[in-house]
Length: 274
Ligand code: 13P
Image 1 (cartoon, helix red, strand yellow):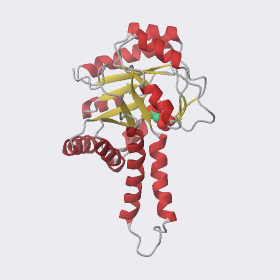
Image 2: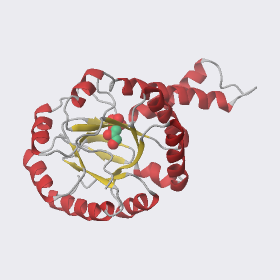
Image 3: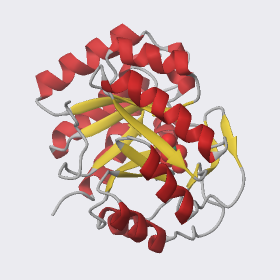
Image 4: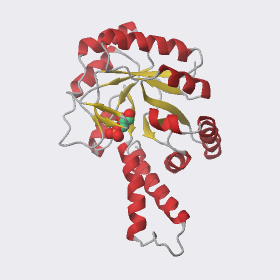
């Protein structure tokens, strides 16, 4: 089985994308920085995109740019959608049953690993619930997993990567995030499987570096920053007075958006250097 993410793999940033243009912006950053990346699609983005076209674009553009790029389905709560992702050649899928009781979360995870592993697709699950807003999913609460739940989950599933709620949150942080590094350390001592940190937006560079200093942390997710970079690209057009009725050039707008997303991703990927 081609486990692109494993205990010995490099660290990955996983950026949420929603169309070919956003995927290209991130892949251009990856090529400039010479880093492997994960492009991930929320359920909403996945349901709106042409899956075959996206798979084809990512494969061919990654080959042309000679960088490893993987497609991942983020926070999926629907088995049919996971089946579709597996059938269309997504490299990994996340079954997010973190809102269910632990036994049901494990049961669903086992069902998905059974489906996915036969097709060389990796599976991510979540224990504890990461709070905040990610597309159509809103979660409130402490956002910290219980050690005994993590232990039980690891013992009873065959998952390939585990999102452990350590106090990060989706969306913008209201205050300074209180991260439970001790839980990360403990989990890393329990298992060799790659750990995933959700809610990467709003964490300082020092925090992101610190998280990646744990050998077990292999994937940090960034979504809100991608959307904000898109917005900043549009804002720049307004500032430069490029949104005028006369002589309006869509390529100026798409160019600014591309550059803004690419710059943001390059800044994140720089944290993986040296
Ligand atoms: P942010 O939107 O906070 O970057 O979180 C992204 C994420 O964890 C996607 O699963």
